[in-house]
Image 1 (cartoon, rainbow, N blue to C red):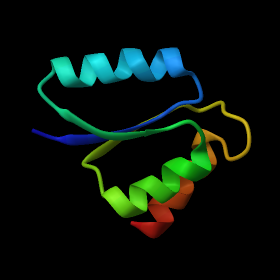
Image 2: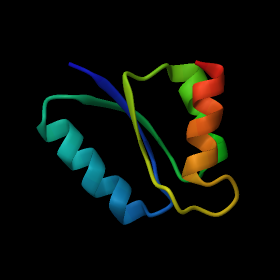
Image 3: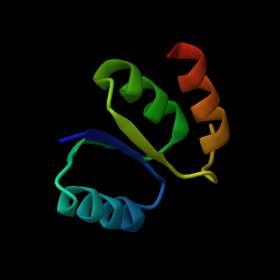
Length: 72
């Protein structure tokens, strides 16, 4: 079972993604509603994979993924 982090500013999309991930037999460790929180949660949780929305206010998904890649 893989562990996931969901990063999306839409509560509806986080719910859909959670249901999809969990129905596939995986565990969702946590959710974040913006890129900055997503990066911090990645650092503390070390998930196996992350779903990342591209267009979010503040730190967008591209910048968040770049930060995660620089970190790990």
